[in-house]
Image: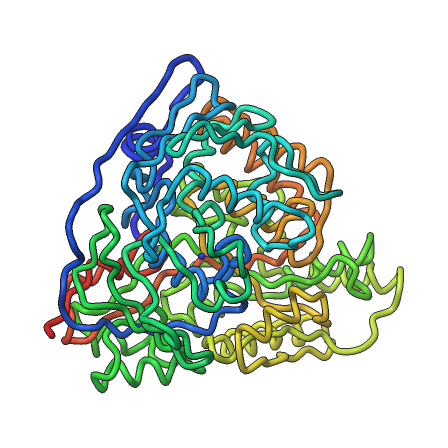
Length: 540
């Protein structure tokens, strides 16, 4: 879940989305662009099979997220630099950063012709937040009054005023709340979504610039075809005849199709081509910083990785990984060794957080820590690191486990899954044994987005079930801070706890490496590494 530096400061959040402070009434408005979608050729691009049916609040991985962002439009959307613009919202107002009044633009419809109203948002958010539904993105509704991790509870902080207006009351002031509203968890749903959720997830009806190209548009493990929606009247007007996302089992196959003219756009170059793709594609190659953090996770109750023993082993393994060598030899300038749990392209990032020395390659210290852990309980078995082969991960996984094996003198090996969806299913169902690759592509341009959803107690993307009351308290304090600077300081303070506990082992930050064929023009990649599909043009 990119491009140039994304700031949640001037020009984006303050001017285009919502309140910038707690002592005034800030109102913003933008106007949509009326008219039918542009025509042109069908753009073909690479992707992967979504993990789940396409319900916005139950999708937290990139394959499904790409599709949802094309067929839905939230209250706000993000441009290529991460700046915020009103989408379905006519205005978002607040006087205290705790109660927000949101006005939905009049005349908006879903692709089935039904109206987009305030209830479309309120009902969708309540469905996503309901405990018994078990939706993966329910965490995002935690700030709203009425949210509960213990029992089914309506979001009492949501109130429909009329068809175009609703209010949101939070449990505490949160100045960056409107910044989050472009994420898929906050998308609206038509009434059809509640009548038969299973059927809707297979053939979703959105309010965005594209819609599914009829029944059978989603061919599982093959691809999905999208066409411009004639009912869309927002700013993201398609400049092409549609998007055909092709699901590849390997990045090598996708890149081969790009070079042969059978694919128009690729957003992930295989590691086997890192040394050559910029020469092969010329000015059509893309290699730019992205809001992407890569890691691997070991469940907090995994044998030998719980309690004091687990803390020592996690630190030992982190010190045993030669990140500099791996990023240089495997990734050849397309990755940067991590120095925190977020991303350098996000405002407030720091490379000098106390405790981050645990990310330094230090074989002697790694061996000392491992020996201390063995004194508590001797190590048994093989250290495994699960990964999906359809994402081009084998080379770095092999290098990482080799580094761990050679440093610690233990057996270590990769655990390959053919499909990303299968890997995520085992992770979600808590059936994974050993370590497994994880990462985060930002949902919105803020430090908190890299921390709360992954490490907050009970969060939907907290794959290791990490829980720390002190960390949770700092997250809450950061969210309620009066300024971005103050919140960033608190988020970075919270990271000090993560460096001690290591619920995930940070590896590196990713550049987006991609490119396009000569068949298309106006190809631009966004701050979050995803191509701006609606802008791409192609002759019929």
